[in-house]
Length: 453
Image (cartoon, rainbow, N blue to C red; front, side, top):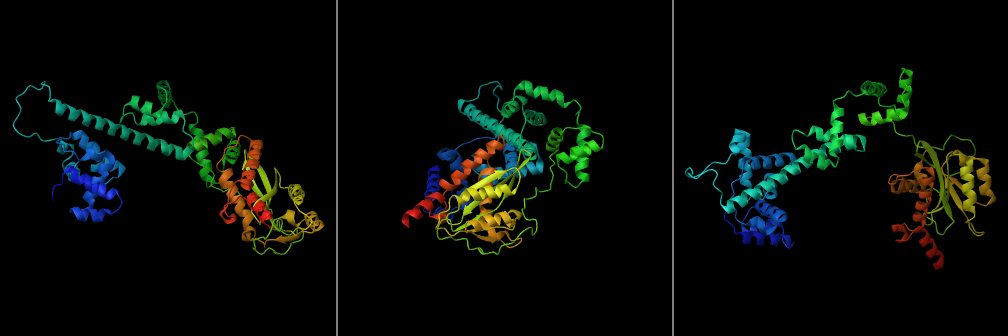
């Protein structure tokens, strides 16, 4: 292969980075394999134009081993590894790899060239050589630090996926496990824990775990019941077996063991069979409305917060997707729906002809509900039994609200949740734009439509 000057390499890289030509065409034009050009590009990305300066460096065996270890741990290719460490030829790295795999560490030792030197070993090295070795040492030090970070965060990430929150004890445990590979002082600094905290936990590691027997028993009960027991039922079973344990302690130990009840929380369903009168499906999935207060949809969804259940009952206008009103309570009683209706009917005008669609929940089958609708001249419509798609718009709102609000925020109490829910629905109505509303929020779209009429 023809040799290229640093200037020619830089020119080829910049020709590719300008974006006018692909890597293959640039490589063909200058007469190199595309993989060679790829390595030049990688070197340029890491070190800039300095990457192509001529260097005459003898690499120490430890540096070679570190390069091979990095390539093995990170899964990088030989070419990419050479670019990362600014080694001019990837063939150099390939030779190190073959030598190490066939003959071991001794094969990485640099061979002495020329005659034996008669100079005193203590004689100072030339300034140029001293600077080269110094930069190599800095690179080795940086590589060692990267290896330490990689090893530490791998273990921490494993703990995080199991129990969520990482404590100082967990960090001390990771440092303790890595103490033979890396300096303890550097690991403590990386973990951001005080030195005294680390040695406090090291002292406690040798002590027997006071909950060792309880952990075994909890694990046994969990497995005996096919992963279907949560911490409350495990606490009850422990009491049945003569162990009086607080449910919070059982929950903490289950988190430490990385076990969790596999039974999904049941979704709230208001359907209880035919308890009143079923209305026909007049809406028939025609979710388009020509004006406000023409078609409304409603349903009830359930939340579980702080060990309590909450039930939300909103009404949505199909004209613009606006939440007309809502009620929320700790029990799914009929008053949840009747109060919502009373609030919503305040929005109606005398000339409005309204249809309200719901599922076949027991609230909507009741005589009181049907009477409230007929008093206001409202037509009732119901989904077919077991067909959620007939009321898809309100179901879609529940999904959006839970993903944007419920699952992304942390709440301090039930009251805090209710206040934040009020803020979210106000945001949903007044600020959250929709593509199908021509980039307007529901309220903006309604006002715009009324002004245009």
